[in-house]
Each structure stands twice: as structure tokens, then as C-alpha cells.
Length: 433
Ligand code: UDX
Image (cartoon, rainbow, N blue to C red; front, side):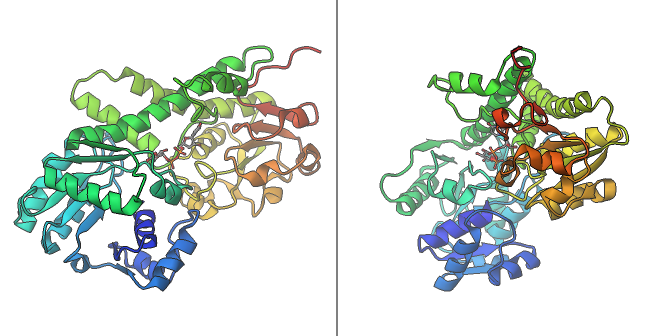
């Protein structure tokens, strides 16, 4: 989020200073080498560096004199499900110590629970800057809604801009910045206080998680209906504008750095308030259960899994990224290993990240072909296009037994059914012909 925000600012001609305490990242960016795999980042970075108005540093001191400072550090989960605020608070402290000039404004882009900006960030900012928020320093909460793989696109074309603040001057500062950033037409603004802005972010992500949990539930019912197909149901209900067609793709469950963590944080937060949150717990449980369901699809297809080689195609939590954090693939692999399978994995982008999580518990294929060769089942876990290019006989030729469990509903049903042992999530048994 930090890098994409920075590069989009640079692309619009702003003077840009990117700060990270990790010197390796800073050096890599200075050398034009992105630190993540993300569409558009490489060309945007080279362009930003060649224009000469973008600098990266590991020293907070360079921020002196900046008008706006976006805080985009992580807020990882604590064992309780709550979030670890230490990075947000220490970044705020370091920023507060160096800010100068007329009404510098700190913008919290990191996802934080309601109460954080006003109750935790503001006191630190005031104490270490020796300024008063609203008087001589600004503070806004401005949550982001960027999707990995489309972060640049989403930054340039957001569906809304949410700004929470406790004073008019901070709000005005950020509104006028976004007006100059976007020009006309400006995306819709939601101007509110800190807590509502913080809550919008969590409610937004939890609602999308709910849609996924819902369609996965419908998929499980469809699997028990003769001729049932969740794809047709999703299309049918998605045309109702009150429902909408997005986030209705049934699959192995959501993953990534946001949905699972944000759901946990919202549950933990609701618990501290003793507020009703059963639906949130249900989404979480369903999502975890969906991975075990995929593993059971493999078991049911194979009879028994113990000692058999199962290849897992796709490790990234979705296509277009090398991120495996909280990926459904890792949950499914855990179940398969527990059932005694020998697991072999492949992902076109996420192999090195996956190694950090999986170590030597699994085998690694250097290519799709290498991964499925000799396997008795393969599970499609990420919707990479590379996986859908092949015909059924590609699998039959390479695999010991061509059992395909398509957890992403990626392959063409008509082409695969009957040619290999094809099991598609959300698809019921065929009508008897
Ligand atoms: C998400 C939010 O979309 C974004 O607004 C927020 O700020 C950050 O978190 P991201 O984590 O990049 O973005 O991924 P997203 O595209 O939302 O997908 C999340 C997970 O849900 C993925 O594992 C994806 O495969 C899964 N998903 C998504 C489904 O299973 N079905 C769908 O229909 C959509």
C-alpha cells in the first residue's frame, strides 16, 4: 500500500519521499527494484526515479517540511485476534519528532480499530511534536481499499475516499489534496469523525468476506443437488442490483493480508465491547471449514490419501500477486499433510514466499508440468491463467491418476468432465443421461 500510494503520487508530479526503516528495501527501491510483485509497480518506479522528484530514505528526518505524511505501516494480528499497533505508534512518534512547517498533516492509512486515531495516535502526535491537532498539526484517518494485484489501478480510481478527522482544518487539508490529485470528477468523499472512518474499513471488508462465505455456503448446497451449479446461481442473484455480481465467486475460502486479519480484529473488538458479532464468527468458521472441505474433496476422489502424491497448483492467495499470507492453499496443504499425503506444490510467482511458510514439509515443482508429473491428484488453488491453458490429455499424460480437484472453478467443465476425474467445487453430480 505504501509503495503503490507513493508511486501514484509521484506519477502525478508530487514531490515524493518514501521512508522505510528497512534499509534493504530502501536500497532496492533506489536501485529501481520493486520489493513486491505487483502489476505496474516496476514501470511506475522507473518512471518516478527518472523524473527525479522521488526519493527513498531510511531516515525519518527527511520528512521535515513535508505537508502530508501518509502512515502505511502494517497492523498485524496478535494472538488474541486484535491488532498490533506498535508500528503505527512508533512511526507516529518518529514523524512527530521531525515534522515542521505550517500545519503538517499526518494521515493514517493503516487499518486500525475504532478509537485508535483519537485515543492512541493523537496523544503521541501532540506529545512528541509539541503541537495541538487542529491548531498547528493535522491528523486524519483515511483507510484504503486497495486490492493486491490492482493496487495502482485502485489508487488512481478509488470508489470512494473516506476521511475521518476531529477538526475541520485537517479534513480540509486532505480534501484539497485529493481534489488536486484526482482533478474532476473527484471520487465521492465520505467526511466523518475518526471512529466512523475506522469502522467503515472493517465493515467494508467484513461485508465482502460475508459475500464470499455466503456463496461458498451456497456452493456446498449445490454440490448436493443433481445438476446444481453455483456459477449459475451467482450469475442469477448477481443481476439483482441489491446484491451485485462481485465477490460471488465460490472457492477455497478467502485469504490474504486483509480479510482474515480484519475479521479477527473486528471480532476481537466487538468482544471487548460485548457487542453482538455472531455473524462475524460464522464467516470466520465457514472460511476455515472451506479449506477442510477442499481437502475432503481430494480424499473422497482418491478413496484414501495416505502415502499418495497430491500436487497443489497455486499458492498465492489469489492470482496476480506473490503473497501467500493466510492463503487458503496453506490451510488446504495443512489438512492434506495431516491426512498423510505427499504434497508437491507449484506457483508461478509465489514459490519463494511459500518456502518461508512450508519449508521442507512439501516438495516443490519448478513448473506446472514438473509439479503434476506422477501425482495421483492435483488441486487447483489459485486462478492463474497458466493453469487453465491445458487440455485434459495434458493431465492424463503426466499424472499417475488424473484426479483434478478444481477449487477455483477454473477449468472448462464441458471439456474436462468425462475425460479426466474432474471434481469442481460448487458443482453437483451430473443429471443421469
Ligand atoms: C482486500 C479488499 O478487496 C480491499 O478493498 C482491502 O483494502 C484489502 O483487502 P485483497 O486482499 O487484495 O483486497 O484481495 P481481494 O481481491 O479482496 O480478495 C480477497 C480474498 O477473497 C482472496 O483470497 C480471493 O481469492 C477471495 N475471493 C474474492 C473469493 O474467494 N471470491 C470472490 O468472489 C472474491
